[in-house]
Amino acid sequence: MSRVAYVNGRYELYGEAGVHIDDRGYQFADAVYEVIAVIGGRLLDEEPHLDRLERSLRELAIAMPMTREALKVVLRETIRQNRVRGGIVYIQISRGVAPRDHGFPKDTAPSLVVTARRIKGASAAAVNDGVGVITVPDIRWSRADIKSTSLLPNVLAKQTARDAKAFEAWQVDENGFVTEGSSTNAWIVTKDGELVTHPADRSILNGITRLGVLAAAKRQGLKIVERPFTVEDAKNAKEAFLSSTTSHVLAVVSIDGKAVGNGHPGETTMKLRQAYLANFGLAGGEFR
Amino acid sequence: MSRVAYVNGRYELYGEAGVHIDDRGYQFADAVYEVIAVIGGRLLDEEPHLDRLERSLRELAIAMPMTREALKVVLRETIRQNRVRGGIVYIQISRGVAPRDHGFPKDTAPSLVVTARRIKGASAAAVNDGVGVITVPDIRWSRADIKSTSLLPNVLAKQTARDAKAFEAWQVDENGFVTEGSSTNAWIVTKDGELVTHPADRSILNGITRLGVLAAAKRQGLKIVERPFTVEDAKNAKEAFLSSTTSHVLAVVSIDGKAVGNGHPGETTMKLRQAYLANFGLAGGEFR
Image (cartoon, rainbow over all chains, first blue to last red; front, side):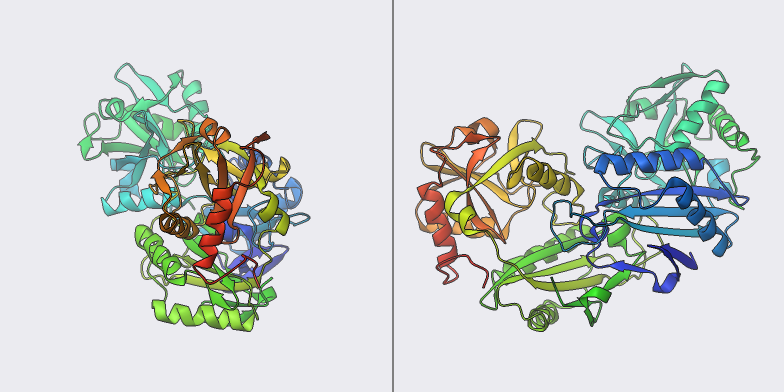
């Protein structure tokens, strides 16, 4: 875990780092966040993450607590103080502290929390053998494109997956389409060789890794189709995989207990994982 | 505001009362809450509020942090220390503090925060002249029946109402039906004299005041129909009103700028307000 946390202007010992009980992040989930991978001491795709952070804030009319340049300094200092070479840096910004009342408070400064910690990332087994997913109804609000802390449905979906010994839960909308996982984006490669993922509309979070994978696929000359796919489409696909900041790209080898393809990570998936990482000059995706 | 807050076993000065940055309430909205009215030093409908609190916790598999009897002692002590005779007591319970990870942590104790503060309640003008509401799309998750802190859509709806100089925003589902307000339940009285409100399914929070109003209506021999109604139904209704812990019953005299009925509080509404309050031995709804 983080040893030192940045909280509203101060670097505090993790164990003592708190926010006020009337912080709107605590009472209303009136807050946004980002998680950025740190590998070899370097932040992966920092600018796109900060672009998305600023977009989320704009959508909720929350001000940036400081300039982007100042925030980048805080990220680096938090990473340094926690001696993280391989791990993540976590940023959370809420609308701030005010006596509880649903509407926006006036003249309240946003709260900023930054932590950094070492993580191991996906296990070698997950990378080499792939992982299983289950499907659950997508019960989230209609603005999943905003990276808010309104994550209770994601929490419940992830726990349902764990209870089923699965790595992830793919959320399925009312029309039977897979939107995304509880903390990852969802992809398939059809038998025709098309790379398919849900379009980045309001029903999914436009993953920064998702964008990196799309760019890698383009470089490889793959046929990319951003359209919703059904659970049946996925079960009948040649390959399936998921993407996220901490998993990069992981093959999905079973869906609701049914093997995808031959039940092993697909060739396109593994090439995309390599191509995604190679773009950062990385041979493997280990957090070190 | 609260002068003293109960936080995880201790009574703390409000200004210094905090929760850990890794509290799941802060990072995931993995928490539930209740607001109970205090009038004349007495808690209104305390048992139904605590019943609902325990139900919300059960739905999310969060443990009660203490017995109900112990919690009742904490509520009273917090009210006493804040010298509240007329106001509210606020209870929030989260799944607790754990390093950030979507799934449920193991062996983590839930966090409990209790605050109490004086409030004035609805103004005499709001009670006597009624209030206006606007309508907005209901963009919430599918489990509005759980009183969770996943309230970001409610925050946005309330702010949209304030920007429009309205008291409340009525949320409208994909089929055109009014579910409920951002922090209140929604009601109409049809021209046939039927009292109509949305059934207590997963798309609304089953207000404790809602239940009190239903009981009052039953005592008055009103024809009660729990069914969804449309915005058009509401605009063409004889009367409309809203209910909540802090507003009790307030006439809705305009919807999206269009007058309901004759544009004044309806007779049935005002009688229901009186009957609801009379059940607590109260003549008026002032928080004192």
